[in-house]
Amino acid sequence: MQLGHGKAAPLKRLHPGDGIVYYSPTETLGGKDRVQAFTAIGTVRPGEVYVGQMGAEFFPNRRDVAWREGRSAPIQPLLATLELTRDLTHWGAKFRFGLVEISAADFALIAEAMACP
Image (cartoon, rainbow, N blue to C red; front, top):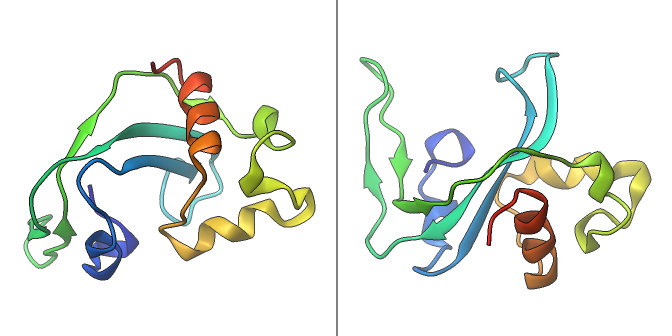
């Protein structure tokens, strides 16, 4: 996985065994083609942050994840249930910070919505 346009700092805050959920606001970066769903879920694998390559001049930092099989889960039906989105008026602002810690209860609700055990 990579976070924050390939920055190493957020990846270094994670530890093996931590759960990770990707939220996708749009289909394309900066696009208006809304997705507004949780689209990937997994567990951080043992190992250090490493540098990958995307294109000729982009070398983002990455971390290995054991991804689970599942389906996308729209956030709208979960807004009133998740601790993360209690402020329903401005719930999307929290995701602008990149890596956001969520509770174990929220992780379990999202995993259930994504049909992941």
